[in-house]
Length: 179
Image 1: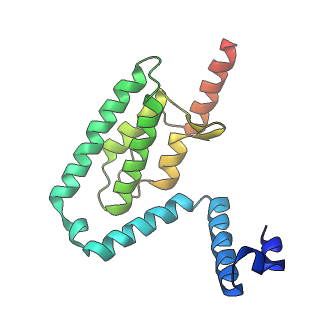
Image 2 (image 1 turned 90 degrees about the vertical axis):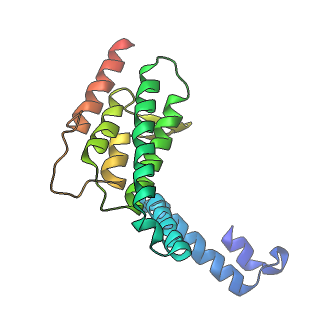
């Protein structure tokens, strides 16, 4: 498409300068998608916008941090209940929303590593090891937690399941035996 536009810019009402900017932007987005860092880039941008708009007020507001943490804890319990209900079609969406909210919380308040909460969210994958986001787009919650918001503190969490690869392999084998 870019070659077509570049060869005939008058037909697309685009200046060479606009074309160059669009090409660079598209290349940057494409590279972010391929490297898997698009979501992380989004979180970094969100944090920076909040910092520009509010300064450091939000990041030092203990009441906000406590309320946000309480919300995530309650949401974790709610998602655990929904995942335990057979046939609950909203459970996966709620689970993904929880993962997104948790990752935003961790990005905004990096020093607040609640190991117990991490363990609770990690354990949810016992009931839902793979999230189907859209058609063939799937997400492993354990991979998401390990890559997007890993714990960096000295205290090691007691994860259940402890080994993600073995857990996923065992779940797959159990599902295969059903058919």
